Length: 396
Image (tube, rainbow, N blue to C red; front, side, top):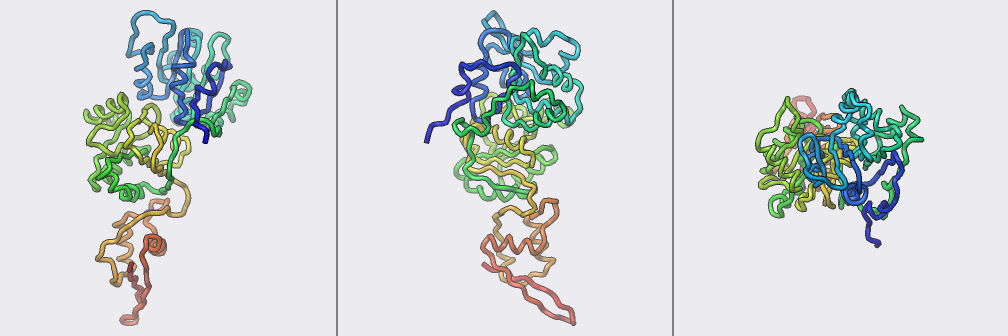
């Protein structure tokens, strides 16, 4: 098997045209290419989608921002901004783009996604200016997930002529992160079965897990789920969230993660939302399980890409109505006794077995789950006082 190559192998020495869109899978070495091959001499503007990625990029020696200065002179410098900050600049400064030799637009899909979701004026101005053609300023865009750009092209047909697309997404020779196994959930409650499956790996092998979900409410629910299993979890969201602010411990773990790429002890489960969907690079070799609680393919790819190595298992949410495979172990008190339908429903509730609509599954569906887990279920009907009642007897 041929050794996979990084992005720089394919693009180094190639003169990129203006308005080039580079589609490259996570793990292909995009940031290395940008700072070691693309940036040479001149004045550069690096645009990113959130504060976390901005913090990471600011670590580069010749990078500066509104919160970090650089001293002395060199043959190049990189001004780092988030898209919203850039949109605010161009809104009142018509010639701002012309101050740079090149503008690098990282995670460009999120500019379109965030603007669509929030209808943000600054982001609208950013889109307007960044998809123009300039004579003296070259613009290069990067993404692993071009879905939202395709939506933008539907509303702006001229982009089909403007964008020069270089697509490595189906290139079998380029490096990318591999998931050794993949599994599915269709409800947040089903995360518990994946955590239970890896119980011994958490306890005896030091395994860690990344969980992505969009809402802080769901993050808190996952935190309780982990606590009930003696797992040490911590939630990290946006530092700019002033409605629900992170405490000092969360900030400490966040800062360490951004700087070192590893999850601080004693934590073994990291729960994030879209604020960290991009911008963090988790190099922690013990993080071998990723659970992505969203059906959005772009968010699935980006969240999985935060772990910068191959992993044992990727679990993603699916819209499929079929209940995904789950592993259960029944309490002995339910074995070889007559159970009514109501008692079976109580077991379903205790196991928190829900379908895609967040409703508890039916007794019929539960019997299928039991069968797949090595249990036998017999049905028995009794008539008492002229009333027929169905009983279920579970055995191994």
